[in-house]
Amino acid sequence: MILLDRRHALLGAALALAAGPAFAAAALRPTPAETEGPFYPDKMPAETDPDLVHVGRRALAGGELLDLRGAVLDRQGRPIPGVMVEIWQVDANGRYIHTADASRGGRDEGFQGFGRTFVDAQGAYAFRTIRPVPYPGRTPHIHYKVYRPGGRVLTTQMVIAGEPRNEQDDVYLSTAPGDRPLIAAELRRQGDGWATRFDIVLA
Image (cartoon, rainbow, N blue to C red; front, side, top):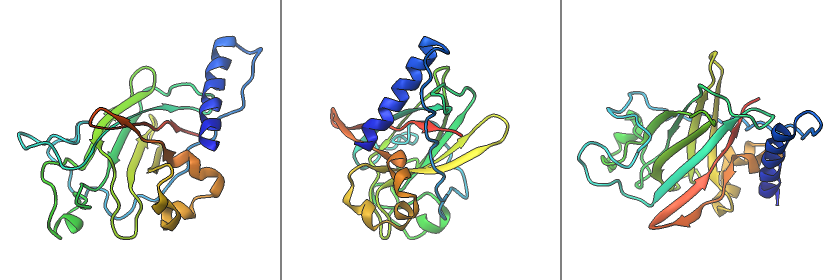
């Protein structure tokens, strides 16, 4: 499987770092850029922390919980320090926090809709959010912006590996076929929710 091949490449890069110059692994393929879409927040929520399922004293957000983790790496598999990661997505009712979308009504006020965090020394990041849901015209997905020190920004998206709606999604289908596995993450059951790992490779 291509997803397994990607994991093997990450492992190979880690082994190369441990073994030194005598072992040379192939460079990792960078995560492709994807459209920002029309609903990046036009007004930031009061809270922008990495726990998107709690807003103030409101009840837990609707939807299925998702433990979303990953790392930001260079093409040699090394962590990149100082990176800020942002995510945004619709709530369980299919509404973004953007004014133009939220004004349609039905938004879950208990869902933050947007979060940001800095990676740690190992390049790792973590968010607590909900499993993404579809809305008309789009497969379930989570938007990302990755801010590298020095001003370079990668805008991309994460979809669910094996999700049938991917094959009817114009954004997913506009991605080169060989790059599609790089924006797909496998979800697994964890307790009463889900968990996944989505690593990002910067060129």
